[in-house]
Length: 453
Image (cartoon, rainbow, N blue to C red; front, top):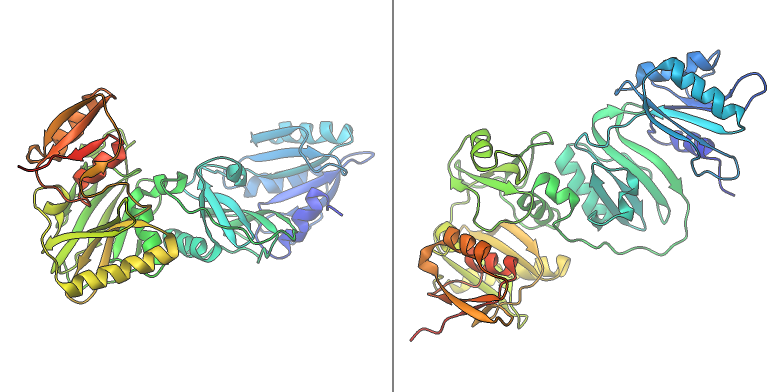
């Protein structure tokens, strides 16, 4: 038997935090109060009349507005729905009108879904969520999808508090997380609806970019995933445009820092990465004045680097590890060629890759080795289609030569102006794991390494 929607909210409120509400059934003289959860009042407090109940609710709403939804007992789907109402007289008149038509009515606090929090669903051991939306975001594309333990760990790292939800088991729980306290219990997590189910456990479909990774930045999301699955990530503070600063990762043996701009989607080598403190607000103003490209700036503890580089899986499903002694920034932008790495460094990176692959499947990551351990400074999911002679497979009607000595920004400009039917012959030595190769793969431009005479 399906519980009436307001009765279901009453049951959920017994075990967790729900949005403040009062509900009414049709009455002879006036709407009859059924259930209430209003901050500062006991559960199901009996207000004297309709006006008092609605006024109490409106006074306690953080946004100063409330919503009205109506339904019939045999169909919990909403009939008339009114959003963001602030005028008490209008609200009361609407409740009386809908009640007079034989409808049940729930008045609840308006919850700002664009407050930097997320909404989503927990079901079958999987959590899916997105910002700037209701729990129905899971019916759209672009939601973050993680196993429940990984997802809750990631959300705790970002928001600084654990999501307070009931154990959904095989059931389906709709929830939302908010930086500002909300709901009857004045908590940061709201539970919206629970449906029992005997469905089989689900499988997460972890991939990024997604709507949440764009909110906090592509690098931030990848590093959070690395941290959650147990890889070694340097202590990182994320200074985000829309979320309060948060930190994660492990301390290093250095007191220096790196500043890394963090675009919403990967833009290989385009924005600043620099050793030493930089004014993050100046960086944002200078490199992204419209606020559309860079989601955050990362301040990351430096790793005393003996070697640094990157690792990918190539078209033959082989792990390719490249790097240089010291810090790898020059290598990544194509200004320095990969060099032979010591056997112990190669062994450590292969073990790190196998651990990541076991948890995520094929990955690509940038690494730093401190002489003892491997640290992850950037992580992406997926293999590449590069090989020893082909950076990006494909045919082209014409081929143009690009010399890697021209630099990464010249390559970016060339890619922007080349017709779609033109491929690139890459002259000069370049690593398969470098930003040059990454940029070509991201552009999906056929690119071959020119044979050296």
